[in-house]
Structures are given as C-alpha cells and as structure tokens.
Length: 276
Image (cartoon, helix red, strand yellow):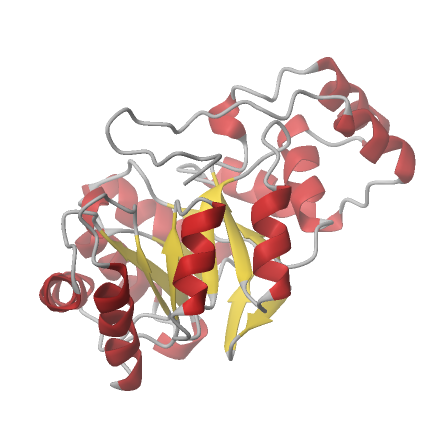
C-alpha cells in the first residue's frame, strides 16, 4: 500500500502516520512493528511520551532502511531556549538510536519560552542534518504567526484537529506559508465517532465512522494525521480511509457537527487558543 505524501519546505511527509501516545515499552514496540508491516511509514513520538526507546526499537526490528520511515519527535515545554532544546534533543536521538529525525517540534509553548532563541536552536539542529525539518505544536494563531516571522522555515504545525474542532484559522496560516498541518487526536479520542451524521455517512459507504473522520481530513489540502492505534486491526481500519471518497452530500452532513469540541486542553499547559 502506498500512502500519499505532502510536501512542505523540502519535507515529504506521509499523510497518515501512527500516533504512539500513551503506549510504552513492549506494547509500543509491537504497535510500531505492526504498523510498519501494514505499510505505515510515518511514526510520531515525543520526549514526554516516554516511549522513544520503544519506537526506535520497533523501527529497527522492522528492518526497513532508515530513509523509508518518517519519524517525528517533540521537545517538552520546560526547555525554553535553544541550548536546552539541543540538550534534550541529544537525549531524544540517543533513545531513538537514530542519527536524525525527519521532523522536530516544540511540543507546547510556555510563557517562559524564548521563542526567537528556541527557533534559532531548531534551525541550528536542522543545519547539522540531525533534523530534516522543524516545526511547532499546539501554537495558537497569533503565536504561530510570530514563529513564522522569525524566518527559520518552519515546515509543520501539529495540533488537535478532527471533525468536531474547527481549525480553519490555523489552516489558513499554514497554507499561506507553505507549511503542513498534522492533526493529532484525529478521531477525537473516540468521543466524536458516535455522532449520527458520521454513522449515516459510514453506512452509506460501507465504512466505519473512524474511516469517515479520517477521510474528511484527507480531503483537506495540506493536512496529515497521526491516529493512535495499538492493534493491527485498528491500524488496518485507519488505513482504509485512503480508499474512501466523500461526496458533497457527505461533507454537508459532517459540516453540521459541532466544531468547538476539544479533547486535549490541559489546564496550566494549553495556550489561549483564540487570542494567543
């Protein structure tokens, strides 16, 4: 199976990847190995997940050339400048047992973040070839614009995005600046899949609500997604979204769903999504 890719600032990212939070240890390694055997070529992890070692072991066990697998990792928000990001990233690579990652992101912004210095730190890591592309995660519109204005060539924004959360403001910014947008929790942590509108569209196409939700994201230009799936059956189900084509009637039905539901909004960590 060939998974379509999108390009941004020289980065070529498979549009469906495997999210690995909160899997750990042998379960995480097995999930990575299974996904790669099914045709996945994009694996998403993070320093905070505590599973980079398992992700790296799963990729190594799969026996694929390193260049065939797109790996994203993220630096936690307690690293507030370029030097701290560099030290943390050195440890990430050691845990992954890899010479480089394909995409390196700042995981969450913090009030203490020295944004210019942090972005310059990311750019220096990229210049060394240890991260092929760089970006940010969980940045609201105003902060994302500030980051882009630094001019370091951000390739990707990763945020929560699904059929019940409108991210059109962020999409407008990423598209205008040649960036990709990666949707995490693209299945709304399962909480949005019981909507009657989704079930009707799924029944019409002989698909599952999860496949409809992912197909909706696939219909959007410049969007990738990293649904978490531990079992081979669920991983295979998610890949089935690639064959699903939604028509205008389907899109109209999905448009009736609420678009203001966040499932990842941790107190004390999340930014001001509207004005930040």
